[in-house]
Length: 376
Ligand SMILES: Cc1cc2nc3c(=O)[nH]c(=O)nc-3n(C[C@H](O)[C@H](O)[C@H](O)COP(=O)(O)OP(=O)(O)OC[C@H]3O[C@@H](n4cnc5c(N)ncnc54)[C@H](O)[C@@H]3O)c2cc1C
Image 1 (cartoon, rainbow, N blue to C red):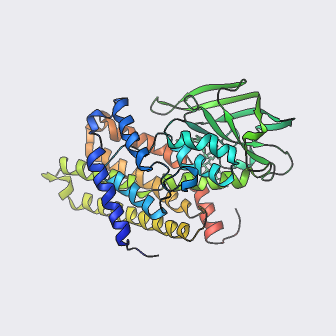
Image 2 (cartoon, rainbow, N blue to C red):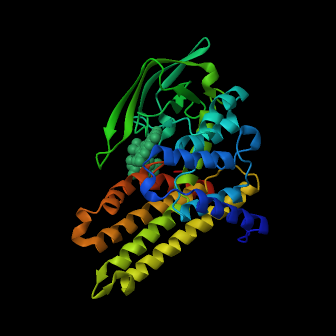
Image 3 (cartoon, protein in one colour):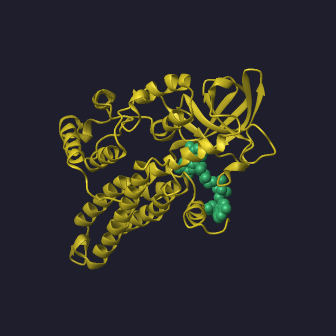
């Protein structure tokens, strides 16, 4: 692992900073669609959406290190997102690039890169979460189509998405080898989406019912029976997104600002030794996440696909976020009940811990696949 950036990488960092100085919209104007559209147009022109995707797929052909720098600088400047379709860009697009046919690449990648699509992800079912191989939603081949019947749950954004990236059962006796990945148009006949309000009464989750939905065979991603391989790669990409340290650094800055404004024993909370120690510990844990992220980058630079290592940061992030929001709520004292951001975060962070796989599941992955301990 080499912690130094080359002169070319430092020059790229400066290019990103210059871009941000020119285009980053002021926070007050960001709710206007035309402001965000202008930001995305500038990013598309630079090819900084899907920047690390190969040029022949329409991406920017950037190195993984440049992608890291891009995200780090964007995060530090609290710039709006790199594109609109988080799931599409973080794992559906990479899965299509890796496993898709030429026709699938032509059909799906341009919309992703031009902020024109919204994807959702259909893994979990009422009796299936951590043990994903126990899915029951089945897809039965009928000529040139699959007929899909079953139910998915906790499907984030299904009420807005145009497409769903799904794992289905195509064969009943083989737990892993009987699964297949399939891409379904959410407008297909037989799909019903039913909302599930979350803890803070926001509608992000859904149940999705599939009643004999007919899906062309050409929408299968990868071979029949290879769903497990496709989805494990996608999950590693999801976890690497969840585990980026950049967002955590922003949270830490917000916490420091709160401590600066809060009083504690006649001085600011930031001057209080106990609060300082807590903040310093958070800073050390975030630095460890950043270094883990760089280790993961190193293995990607060596041409290895996303691996179980992404579970390390996914596992570190959950408790860190919850502890940070607990400290913030403590600093706010009686104001905590009314304070928007920290109150919302302190409830929402419990979801981040579970989404993409619970801490126990990350522990199992770390112990079995990284440490080589016996299977669960
Ligand atoms: C914010 C958020 C967004 C989500 N978005 C989506 C989405 O878009 N699409 C989607 O498909 N799903 C989504 N999910 C669902 C999520 O993937 C599942 O909730 C998660 O995988 C856990 O599954 P479960 O809820 O069925 O819990 P279970 O699997 O029933 O787990 C219950 C408890 O048992 C523990 N446990 C289970 N198995 C083991 C084991 N082998 N060893 C030790 N402990 C174990 C777990 O750690 C957990 O504490 C989302 C969830 C959240 C919170």
